Length: 149
Image (tube, rainbow, N blue to C red; front, side, top):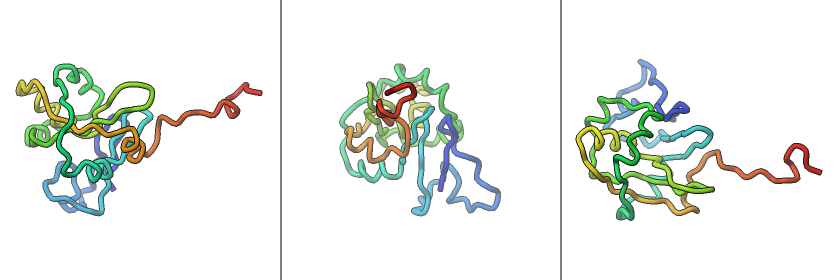
């Protein structure tokens, strides 16, 4: 299983891991689960990719609007230089407002670096986002809140 740190960076692979299990590997390993975490939220990217496989992009990301967010995500520059910008990003509609890129930060980094103004994106519905969300965004029940009667 591939785990990412709180900033979205994959944890270091052990030296004993075969190359196909390392982040950025070109060969897919079906036993791995890719996750993305931003602050207190985490998504199963493997599930998001399965949900969006073959779907035409239904949105665009203006790269300069998202460029500052790259500081919040650990980027492997070598991997970013090799990514395919024709692969759409996956964007989640998050509860309580807004959208968040949950897959494609290395593509965004490359696009910003080489001056690509927009990238295509597949936008998850609220139901799809919830199906991919591992944790975060849970609503508290008022009766369980501290100080409630």
